[in-house]
Amino acid sequence: GEPICLALDFNIEPGMHGLIGQYDRAHDVFNIVHELYARRLNLIMLLDMFVRYINTEAEGFDKYGEDIEVYGDATGGREWEGVGETDYTILQQVLEENNISYRIRVPGKNPFVVDRVNSVNVALQDIRGDSHVRINDQCEQLMDDLRRLKRDDFGQVDKTEKKLSHSADAMGYWITYVRPARVIPISRVGGKFGV
Image (cartoon, rainbow, N blue to C red):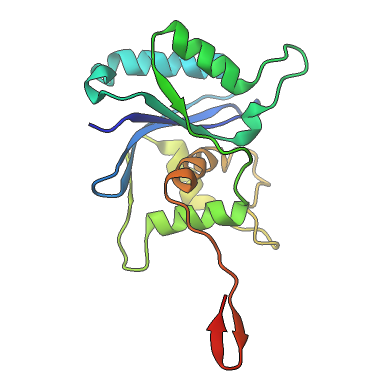
């Protein structure tokens, strides 16, 4: 009964990345069931793959009774110089042409990388040792990202290998929007901890 979610990271090189899943609010679990990725995949091609998936693999998404929820990179809201459209404008046009109702769940600006990484890490395993993420093992690009990504010397995501991070970024935008975990600076004053 939960809406189908599409999480996006916009890239030309190595290509667009999309994740399809659902967030089970009752059990606080992100179920990631399918990934959309190919080298040099553009937004139109990715959306065609998504519509095909919804119409075939998702067994008729109308049974979910809600709009598709779209999460992603806030920079997709910038207009392209050549056409004056944003990635999200194009996404809306394609979904509407295919009679797919949707809700865009993208903040005005991206969360800090450290907040996104912490949100994902806490979702993968919280302080009690519980995981709030289930990933279908067919999501090979996402699994590769999660196995191999590291932080650089400045605490940011090391993006020296261009193939890595984009699928994990898409997951991070989704998780941070739904289940944010923020780093709260703590200072020690007079023997007590305070914010």
